[in-house]
Structure formats: structure tokens, C-alpha cells
Length: 312
Image (cartoon, rainbow, N blue to C red):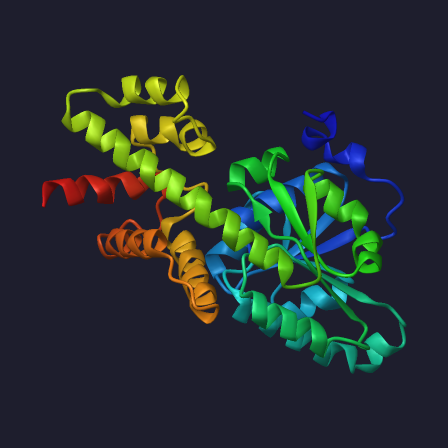
């Protein structure tokens, strides 16, 4: 593993940007902020949640009162919002700000790095609408839990024009040095959905196997060790196995968030004339988990719903 992944300061070179704007102050947003802080950047953040803004300040960062305030402070904005409608809203506010005398006098560019998992077609359309504007959109969804993002071990999928990516390479490298370029804006979202499909099903299959083994008299810890030493081993087992064994569902990622992603997968596949039968079953399982109050628990808590299914 590269030493740089855990030392973001070593990835910073000569960026002229000192303060980074951050919109969306949930698990991912806080982890990204920590990466940037460790690299020597200041962060100013905004979230529609008063509690999220307060928590952001409590861990040592500056919270703004609005999206406009963030944009007025920094010309580089990182988005870790829930869905693409949030991305569109931020960019619309950025477009309005670019019409102000305050901005016109600066002759600056605004760089927006979208780290959320979004709707590929909407992002593609948005990028086309921004052609010729002073706003550059870069896709950079992160594959990995909030803990992995904080540690610098997540994988960043990049979509956008090469020049735009190079202009913000210092900041991208600080967030994650493990990067894969997948094409223009829209393609990173497609890549994230496809890889998340496999990840989510691996996690659900592992949880189902654990409950199945438990019903046959094999305890969870023993089953985890079995899986880790057989061809059934997967990153899902490595990263979520102990949480399932210990019934530790403090969120590093949330069931509700992954359900949103799976619904995007199913919709995208439908447009191509494809069904995703396993993902449809997975979505039904997660909807039941949300209905049972588990939506804001870690994705490892899908095992709780599988356990409920066994009892029926």
C-alpha cells in the first residue's frame, strides 16, 4: 500500500487554493474534511441540517449559513450530498453567484467536485449545460465506507475533462490517491453503480450465509473465520464480518443510502431493457429493513432483516 494514502499532506504540492468548500456534512463529508485538514487545507462547510452544521463545528471546522456563503469563500467546492437533486441545487446557486459583480470582478473559475453517488444521465446533462460557463464539474464518487475514506483507502472514480481533473489534482490526491479515470462526466456514476451492485449483493449474501450457518449450529465468529479462509472470502466479509459478529451497527455507511443507490441501478438497467433480479430482491430486503427502523444503521445491519426473514 502506498504510504501516501495515510499521509494526505505528502500528496499536496503547490495548490493556490487554501480553503475548500464542503457541502453535505454527513459521514462522508466529515471524513473528506478530515483528509483535507490533514493535508493543511482549511474547510468551510454547509448542510441543510442544523445538527450536521453544529457537529461540523464541534470537531473543529467552520460552518457556513448557506451554499452561497460557501461559494463566496472558496472557488473549489466538494459535494457529498445525498442525491443528484442536491448537486443540481448547488450548481444552480453557483450559476447565480457567477452573475454577480463580486464574482465577475475576480475572473475566477469555480471547480465543483461531486463525490456523491448520483444519477448518470442527470449529471451528463448538467455537464453539457455548464459548457462555456466558469463552472467546471468533476465527478469523483468514492467507493468505500466513511472510515475507509478517512483512512485514505477508498477508491475514487473520476469522470470529467482531463484539464479539469488536472486543475484540481492536488485536492483529489489528498482525498484519495487510489484513483481510476473512467471517462467523461456521467461515466463515474455509472461505474460506481455497477461496482456498488456487486458490493451490496456480496454483503447481503454474506449476511444470509451467516444466519444460515447460525441456524445450523455454527456460531457467527466461527462462520466468519471459515469464510475468510475459503474461496467464499470477500471484502464484504473482511469489512463487515466483525460488525455482524459483534452486532455493532454504528454507521460507517447506511442502509438507506445504499437503497437509494440500488434504486438508481434498477432504474438505469430498466432504461437499457435489463432486469436486475438479484438487486430487485436486495431492494425489497432493504425496504423492509428501513420499514423496521434500520435505515440509518450501518449496511452490516442488513443481517438483522435477514434474521427477521428466517423467523417468518
